[in-house]
Image (cartoon, rainbow, N blue to C red):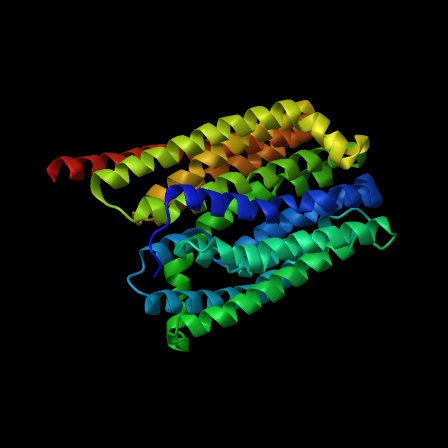
Length: 413
């Protein structure tokens, strides 16, 4: 293994490089929104939201807890086995999740836009098969750059040119699907040679699903309430109302790459030390995520409406109230990401995280449905923000308890 990288180099690698992949959709989505029209744009983002949930089902928890498992693995043989376990589990889950995804996308799409919604859903769902979680665990942003970020940037530019030249908007999700499949395949072939290890025997497959169930259920619950808003709005509203909500949701989701990449940068940095040093690093991680969440809420709330009008066109401009509500949800998401990735999952608290997320989901989805029925898209956004807040508050006490335990260990030492 290479020498541990400094915090600065990790922040640069895991923030700037994934930013290339995250920002690249901004090159093509304005062309998609203008070419598809309000109903097509809303259907595309609704399909993408369904795909985000399907990606969680396909990943079966590996993208969430996998980086922590890789970062604390004792040797390369164990890392190679973990990646093989992940390949097998995720291929099996995709056999069930992907066909169901297509059906749901067609149902939530506006008439005439079922294919676009399904392709956007598949593009999002296949991210669940991506390799990037392993690169995060071993501190290898370079692989993300060459196998994922740069190819996504390239196909975004080509898709934009193609759509502006008159080709159908479906070109964009098809290109995204190709990037994920080819990039992940090439990386996996290289990794399997570099990290030799046995494949899991078939008799162990049920055990792999049982062990991963708490994280998978937590991710499914989280994905359920985070994927509900846009399809729900697409059902209860049409035209510019649905398009404006889709724009706000898309900006919020694009912004989520920042706390995620920050968490990735701090993952192995916070885990490679023990005792008091670990406690201090965890405090830094939580403070950075909390401050970043507040900043994101302010930026999305104040600048979301004019930026969305500029990017996606006036008919798809995001309403001010919806932007502030989704900004609050973003702030809670940012803080909770550090709580789970840096403190709770490495401490084996997967079940506690699952319970909190399930509780928030049970309360939050009815809140969103009721809010939508009473107040339209703004009610859905407010219900989503409350759901994120409930989940974060429920996890705060468990996080503080773990931090207190680390402080006691330092005192005893």
